[in-house]
Image 1: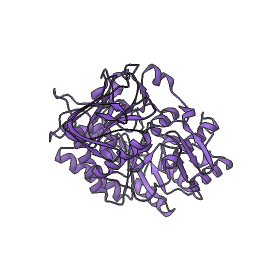
Image 2 (image 1 turned 135 degrees about the vertical axis):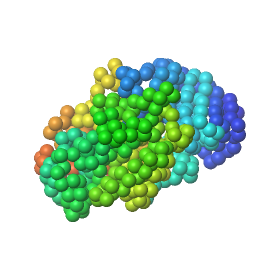
Image 3 (image 1 turned 90 degrees about the vertical axis):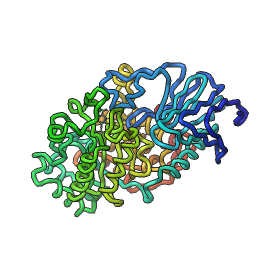
Image 4 (image 1 turned 30 degrees about the horizontal axis):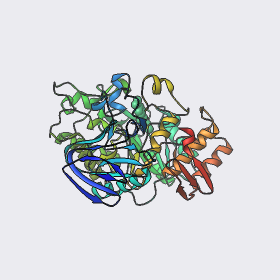
Length: 482
Ligand code: 9PG
């Protein structure tokens, strides 16, 4: 079949024309292409996984060490000899256009080599196939996804202060009360407490550093006009947690009955099987509890864990089990609670959450070359890694609030240059999600003014290319940083 003058050999069960391309159906579809060893648009599985153009001239390199793989990208394909991605993928044509294939249901895989672009899915599904300018093709794909998976946010994303990238784990009631007071006069809308408040990963009760419980902090934030926000990782638990000790049978296992390792943070952790009715009850009651404490913004983290390969009670496919668990969370939280999904499978989260982290963690430094180059891991905390993946996920903007992670205004404890800080601030503007973790007491007068001006600004954003934007009267080219 010829599309735009090129011969593509399409193998699918059914093919029909749609606006901007074709709809295919099948469990596996294949498109023979004439582009040889071109560039492949790789779309990593979850928030932190790499999204970028990669060269088919180089073979994919597995992330090291192997124990890290479950928390970096889909471990089911960690050793795949061909380039692939989650849900969608594309190839650069000869003229800057892209041959694109995207699944219209979660759980699919798209792979490419010099001869073909191939999609495979656990069931027969519909696919969107197109050849055109990358922005146009991705825009049309987003429209089709909106029809099948839904769109959540109507109003703009809230402006968030998050405790992670300043204090990290070193948070306490006293410290955060002090922070809330310092935020007076800065137009934030959400005050979000991150990792460090809980007794253990799995035991979502406040630890000894929060002697009056979290209600006090929620109330104080609220009385200052801020929506109280809270981080939790509801699908995982450490072996030392009470949750795991009391319910080892609630956790995902492989065919041999061994627990599935979900990552190596905190000395290692496991994932709940969210298809078990007892787990579903526990999950909904956890969400109702934190809602009862006053929280109306939840940053739900390490969500990929429950979609890892393993044996599930219900036998549901991985991403279907995940999506059903998100639906239960949404039901328990209510429609008005803002849900930000982090470390989350991308397509399977659409329509159920308000915001989605679209890249790995930023850090107050530019790059981590040891991890990126020598350990083949593009997902480590670093401004560069966050920029690269977030830029390749901006096409999701019509579907969900796209969170590129925080921007910095502080120079204290910060190795980023003024230009690098400015670049992250601009990234937040084009992504439409403004957040920072700078403790107000770390900012000097000028930095505080810059933060305030940035929070207040609402400049018109006009895309001029995949990496170029007009922001108000300025032109910004992010490709200079890639
Ligand atoms: C809290 C943090 C912050 C942050 C999240 C998430 O692959 N890793 O080792 C890895 C560790 C931490 C991490 C992401 C990946 O950060 O993205 O915003 O909430 O948890 O622990």
